Amino acid sequence: MKGAEVEREFIEAAKPEHPSLLDPRFIVAELYNTRNVPAVFWIDEEGWIVRGNDPVYAVRRNRETGETTINERYLEAVRDWVRAGPASAYLTPSTETQRRVGSSDEANQQAMAHFRLGVYLDRHGHHEQAVAQFKSALELKPDNWNYRRQAYNLGSADEYGMTMQEAMQTVGPMYAMPLELPEVPST
Amino acid sequence: MPVTIVTSETETSPPGARREGAALWLRSDELLASTGWEIKPEGVCRGEICVPLPEDRAGALLAERDGATWLDVAGFAGYVGQTAAHDDATETWYFGPGPEERRGQLDMLDAPDFELPDLEGRMHRLSDHRGKKVLLALWASW
Image (cartoon, rainbow over all chains, first blue to last red; front, side):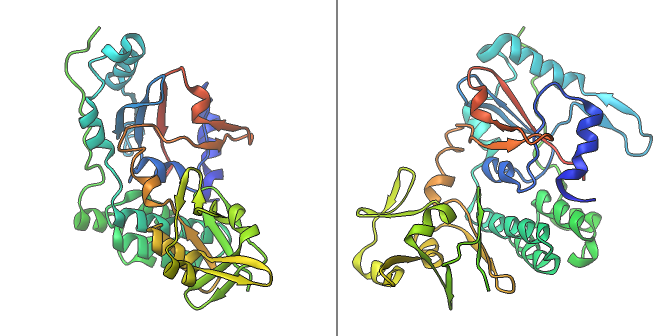
């Protein structure tokens, strides 16, 4: 089982009260210029991004021990924003938000075209052609982990001549965008 | 071989599409549904953006055939700087956003709108939540 159906068991186990949406075509990754998951954006009442691209999950699971921990620090930041709104110390100044969100360069846009065509081709049973498109995307943007993880997930690392570990050694760590939270909450 | 055109929002197989070398010709009545572009007197338009075609460009990118107007959408994408990718074996083309569309909104920190289904197939639009704070969390199970 591959693709969006994989996520069903995770969503059904978590039983979220908020909408949990499926994006098998990577529309949001394209729109928000993300290159990995997780990526969290804070959007205010008027539709402005007031904090962006946080590489954070609410719950983290230790892959070795299976132990889960709740990310209290980040949840407190979210609660502070809910209470304090624009006065929350956790909002980032717009120049900083712009830096974190980044504007997509030409190479990434072209890579995204290859990636999204690859996703389409794989979904329609053209795996070999999809791999060719994923390779083109990764040649242009070797550090886009959305591309690499999805490509490896739909096939195998062998098709790309590089394991995930080797890719990280070659192109850099997976989470280049650190989570920066101020020490002092505003409320 | 039938041509398939994939964009950010649509996947279509316009029956009239014709591939000729590097060109992909679409008839004006199939153009809007497949690419979002429309041929108007002021140029080739999508939403509020209109791209006027100078005569030499119009000569290469537009054609009158079988009583209809055709646009070479691959050539046009190159002209306007719209990203594109294609697969020859399956005759599948992807056309991405144009430069005006991909700059601007995100640079302004104006959260781009989208519509996606939940597990039950119900559609949700980001802008439906205007007036409330939204925490947009992207994840995958990789």
